[in-house]
Length: 169
Image (tube, rainbow, N blue to C red; front, top):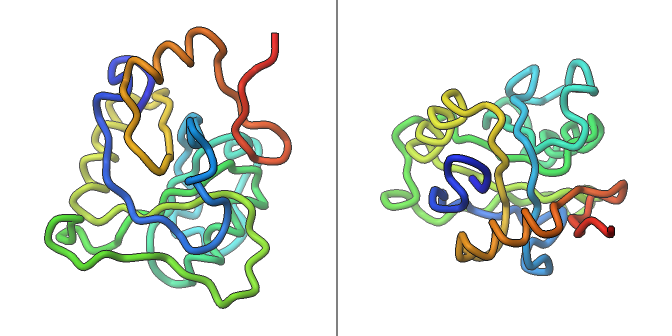
């Protein structure tokens, strides 16, 4: 969580997908406001694309593949997907490492990550208290001062190709 009041000091370890954009190639990762998918499991087209365009969309695990969920988020204009585990008792610390995979025929371009249940619960609590927060999906934890100075100096935007870039003044 990179905007006020967190400024990068609050973060969650998440498992990356083996499809979509590779976050290791982006220094700042993908940054955006958050929207909760409707329907929450995102196994069909999301309702009201305008709510999801340019946003990091949160979906819940279950009923269809991770690839289908991410495809539906991308079709609705989302710039990334966060998949929350439907088992509330799993955790990055007590569960086996988990990677979302596809069948090899993926054309998804946006990144997606998986949050285990306990981390998902904490994330959703913070999101409920701060619904306008910006979140960052990235490979590495960045020093908060780097995030803050980059944000205030240049700002960030997701362009039409769904790749994070700096604003050009």
